[in-house]
Amino acid sequence: MSFCDIKTGTCAPEAPANEPSIDHDVTQTESVNHIFAEILYATDPICSHCWALEPAWRKLLYHYGANVKFRHVYGGLLPGWQGFQDTGAGIRKPADVAPHWAEVAQHYGQPIDPSVWLTDPLDSSYPPSIAVHAVRMLAPEHEEIFLRRIREALFLEAKNIACFELLAEYAQALGIDGQQFTTLYQSGVAEASFRRDLAEIRQLGVRGFPTLIIQANAGKRAVLHGSQPYARLEQALLQATGLEPATQTPTPEQALKAYQSGTTKEFAELLNRSHAATAEALTAIGAKRTAIAGDAFWSI
Image (tube, rainbow, N blue to C red; front, top):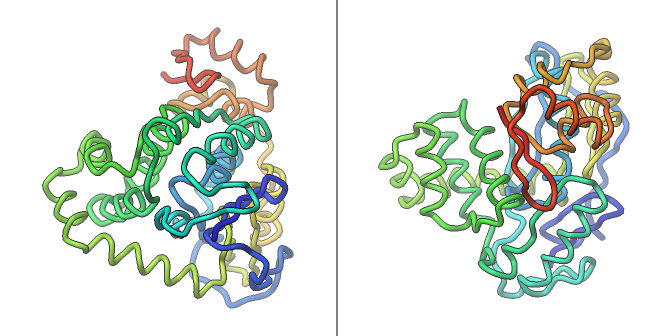
């Protein structure tokens, strides 16, 4: 059983009716040994609500990335299609995902091409999760970049990222040794690491993605469920850490240099501009525009 809900902005591997309660408010917990905070991000490579969170998540890291550490924990949203159903979203077979993803894209404004579920559907989200763990083992500094790349391939290019050959291609494009990647992926070593994530997810009581757990060194903790607006992410971080709010809005040139590439929605979020004004500004500074998923993807 699985559940995806537009209202809560959450995808879950199980129906959340019996989900343990995790307080959204900041609460006192034990201190951690980080400069300001660590953010644990419970996610899945094929989670559409996690993709919808990208504009706010990238903006949070832009303003506060130097003050926090973060790590991903992968939750196994789709083990396989046998016995799978998401009654909340009306999903019982791969083709049913396409209209759900179209609804997510319309609701959040983050473009998605859902056609992969009609032309070359994924049979599981485990392969990309295992691949991310292989990258983490070989080049941990590339994990976030690799995760972003396979998400772009899935959500914007309609590529089946459960395909090993495609995953290996993206890893090698980052300079990762293909033979080592293959060995870790096929030997079960990376899968064992991924399954430790699954165990941690269960231990934490996290049933929906995205879930962000902010643990501050001052002893405060905040938990956010579902795809959240940037203001909510920032508020939770500031309340937990005592950091001062970021007040500087980057110029289009600074935004493009920082992101290197992104959707119009992502740049609009960072620049605090409308969709049209953002597209105009990026065009004016010579950003490369690629038509994709019914919108635009911008790059240097």
